[in-house]
Length: 553
View 1 (cartoon, rainbow, N blue to C red):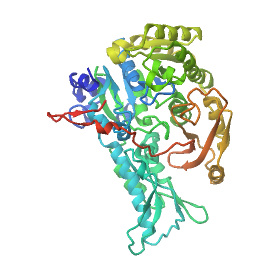
View 2 (cartoon, helix red, strand yellow):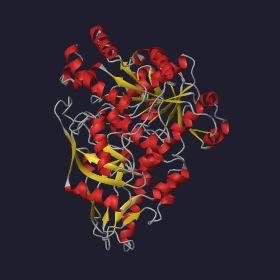
View 3 (cartoon, rainbow, N blue to C red):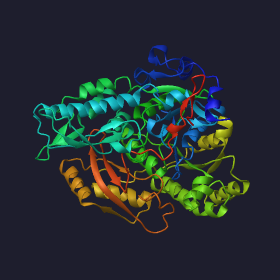
């Protein structure tokens, strides 16, 4: 049975009942139909002095192009915790339309471990990403309008881009203002995907609506001839942009197929942004549940690093346990096995790829000082020999492990992992960051490159060096770094899967995000506007004769 059929054949609980069981009062809920709702900020205010629950972060090894089932694992774990009698809450990101219509399809889990209503969440949901897109593009319109009417602020260069929540490589660079109207100023512009917009980053790192407005005002949109920054506040844009986001900033409540509450809010990519759901949603979940399961995008070198070095630092959080997801496919992929052969049994390639998993676990345990358990996401085609080999290898290295079958069995397939989590949450940790904020930007980049990626050194273009100097001169050198890098490798080369030879990280550019309060470091050939694959998922998405959506997987 396909994911969509499993979801449609499961009777959901009304969202008002899910909220009630969670302790949310009727007046604190704004319903969007029967099965999804927005949660009022009054809930957090009411529960502010309540002790936080335990925070479990789900991350993974470097993935294959189709992902390794982190979301499925996170959902299965939350359901598994409820199966063993724990009050669990999920805190996940919202899917972007880019991957939904691109290579990956939907992002609401799979099999019997899904959040629902699946089609709604994968498509327009409650309109949060559309609101972010509109706020971003309102700022673009106000910039060009200001220049049109005389450029009083003295824009010499504009650094703010437009955005759209789709993969469209044609929009990476565009010429604008070509209508030849009087006073219109043509210029080169470009589009990012909405989930890479600074508005998305601000949305996910803001602590409340007031902090959201403050951060939006701090966005640097351009520079004068004297290299003086021009902000959204200078354009008087922060008020109207915040208005567009006033409903979106409230977290969304949905449920798993097993009725576990799921707070789904915000959705930055981890390869080109910081890859975590909103601080508001995570903090709220920690007040509502005794165990909160959250996820950071792609491998632990990206999502988990940014979750720890950016989100945890800014929000004063730390995970009590980290789950590192691995699959036989990904291990063989990183052992050098050709993509077309990944369904074939091979202990040899599994052993070679084990180094990727071992490095991620070592980083989490010894660089960050966290409790770690490896979750083997079992696929039906995995052989007994492969499973036993991996189990023995992990035991040899004294790494906690659990074999998880949540795709096939839902929460029942994750009770062993849930029990392990419960046994680990109170184990002493020595949590530390990969770098300290007072270090120079170059030293922070080097710390992540060497400690987390295992790189030999970092190389910079002249443009990147110039921009680092400018950022530090402006007084922003104490911000954390958000490194944009391929998700497929510890290196910045997506084809260097095994990373056997010493490698350097190549920094192409460094961009200040004053509103988000971090510095984006662009490495390798990473793009902030992805393109569609040769055969996009969009070709298979349609309506059937009963008007049901088909093709989202």
